[in-house]
Structure formats: C-alpha cells, structure tokens
Image (tube, rainbow, N blue to C red; front, top):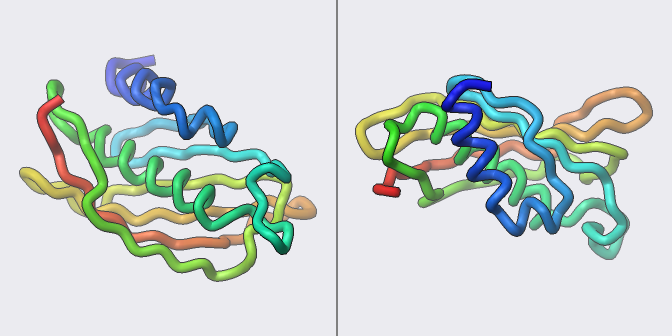
Amino acid sequence: MNNMQERIAASFNSQGLMATLGAQLVSVAQGEVHIALPFSAQLSQQHGYVHAGAITSIVDSACGYAALTLAPPGSDVVSVEFKINFVRPAIGEQFLAIGKVQTSGKSLTVCTGEVRALSGGAWKVVAIMQATIVKVHA
C-alpha cells in the first residue's frame, strides 16, 4: 500500500458513520475511490430499500476520498455541495459507491459518483451524484 492509499484508509477508518453503516473501503486509486456496503435491514426505509441517507453517505465519502487522492500532503477535504439523483430503488445484496474526480483545481474539486446495486448477479446503477469538494488545511 502506498502513502496515498494509507492516508485514505486511515481517514476512512476514523469515520464513525462508515463503521456504523458497515461500509468498507475496497479500492483507492488516483482520482477514484470505491466503497462497498452490504445490505442490512437496519439501513432500510419503510419499503425495504436501503435508505437514501445510507446511499448518499457512501457516495459522498467515495467522492470526498477521490478528491483527497489528489490533494497535497497536509491538507484535507470536505464536501461543500452535492446533488444526488436516485434512478431506481436501492434493492440488492451489495452496493458499490464509486467516486471519480472530474476536475481538480487549487481549492475546489468536482467529482461524479454513482452507486450500483448487486441483485441476482447483475449490477444496476441506483444513484448518481455530482459533488463539489473543497481542500482545507488538516
């Protein structure tokens, strides 16, 4: 594991919400991060789908960590804005949030993210996000 991956893993492991959700960091590359979430009835809403808040949380984190892969040492990142579209119900055994940097400037990074659900052996996109992330001093 390189310094960038160690930095992202250490930050991810310090997030109480990701631990509470049962999310796992599965892939870290320059400008792209993947976070997995197994289905849990404790994360469901009244129709049995995974709650929009849980889906939003993992893709927000995937986008933020994708931005952090490009941030200079000694800095950190926080989300300042995002929009999410839910394109189908979050039904599945496993969910994968993928955050990708689209452009990274001096202070702002714009990312896109999507969440895929694994159901019956097939992956389907359930949510799409656009996020703006700001670099801050750690």
